[in-house]
Length: 537
Image (cartoon, rainbow, N blue to C red):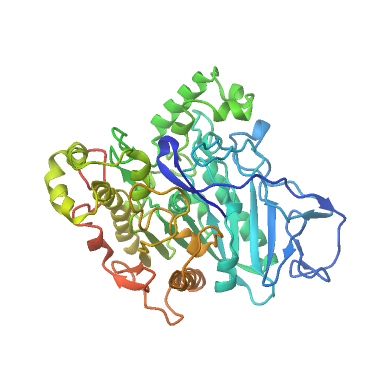
């Protein structure tokens, strides 16, 4: 996994992890007979029988890894902008030693990556302990990237598997215009990427036991757009029974961002697209490409579709369809969500990364006061009094503190209140302000920035951890995997993690309970931000 940082178009969600060069899908070798519990006898655990055919993975010292397994048919040709279909079966043994390609995504000049034009990309990877035993919890990870970039195969699950004795599945899903174009009249339009994720969960339900996993104990977790997806599935009828616990890292159902959050003059943004707006944008997008129908768009090459000027604007999940009947925040408010235990948290300094990108040169004191006044209108004096410049090292850090609280932390706290009325909820704040940063020197300290917790769960050779950070990583893996096993993160001799409203602060000098609502001024922003400029909803 290589950490890259870009700002993901108009969707405005940080894409923390971007793919390495795409690899080709596996080949098929002659069949082998004789399986025991899904694993071929005499094959050293490298060959497993899935419901579509045999796959050969790689056996390592402590784990087995199976890469590039198709969980759905290629969404190409007439299946472009259709609900995912089952994968074709195969004869013989399919090589599962290299990842499938990253789903189609535009180039990222800031990250120095060329992007991908692969639409045949609905693959997943499975990492499982080498030794078979009783069925293990299964953790299904959804990558971030603002719904426009990233790849599941970028995430090395070895630390989670070894430290928690779990099976980990990482998933690729359709991105951008291919996953979220809400063309009028097409069933499921605007949420095909979410449907892909549900197809992967159904694959897990059918095949987890063959890899030593327990299909009755599945945890869905993700970061950034992956966390938003996880929250969406909490409210999606189609996800009923597909997972039994949920972990959201830096993304929640009620996330709404105020104007100016991504740069001077940037508009207020709801991370979920209303159906009427999404349909209008889809029609405008098609018109810009010279098309008046979905059939016309299906005939265009991948690169042309990625290059459309409005492509970033049609890349948010849309509600008001069978996948998401209602806005996820509305569904939570009405109690329409699956009753599974939840972990829902964020990093302490989420928005510093986005401020460092969106405001160049850094914010001055005068500009800070202008931004507060413009963003919060009549509420601005209360906000300015709570975040005085004298208590922050720079105006950029003061502005980032406001945006972290109103856009990330307080919406999570608000959603946790709704969730906790009907299920167990645990909240956290990743607070290691010395977390490794591998990019160019930022204009101010990034602290515990958006995505800074990822190398603690998924090892990254470029992000070296200190001994204290390694201990924090081990503690986090213990918390995450115990939650996957039991529905509670407690145990293992670590500080107890009380249910909401208390939370856990995860810092390099040791995890400890903390009042996260107070830390992030959620009395001032009780529900985050709404488009009316009143900081609650």
